[in-house]
Image (tube, rainbow, N blue to C red; front, side, top):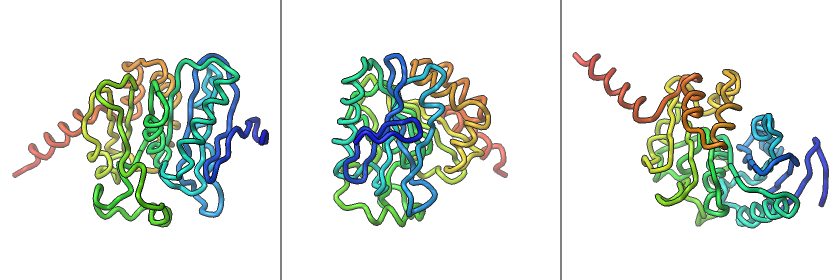
Length: 255
């Protein structure tokens, strides 16, 4: 069971869910969920390794789903709980943050239904993989149609109004508007839009502009102002401001 690869330790493997651990320092735990990856016949790679561990050498779990189920694999909840319990058996953990891109972002949001979380950073998360929620979405169809029904998470859940979890949603509007706008504005959720970014390039863009690590560090620390600074430096802004600007541009351009 204790298979050590890439300097990490395999903590849990239940069904298609695998959780690999990078031991760190301090009392923070970051859980990074993988997206579907590029190759169907290979497991999704670990994502955001450097940003999850960070300059503070945080404890980090990297969770992959071989079945690409958008957190709907029956083993998802039990595997996640078991991995966190095993980390806590070794170290005092006072804060847990989840992180992910695309399907990983959806899973990062879904994890709040399983674990008490302090913060969630979801980059390009799908609102749903079901047509009735987001219209004729054709992306990821190979995996979406293989998920057994009924779904545990037909839509990406947000914490309730009284939850203490801080949520940061980030979407590129070039091809993700349907998913972005399906998320209802919610208390405790900061939703940022990037007008010039696509679903697949938003994560890379944040990293290439040097804003990914500062954004994640600030989200973990609960420093909302620093999150906003990182977002704006990368070309994004609050959802309300972006949409108001778009409406204003349409008004001014009307004959």
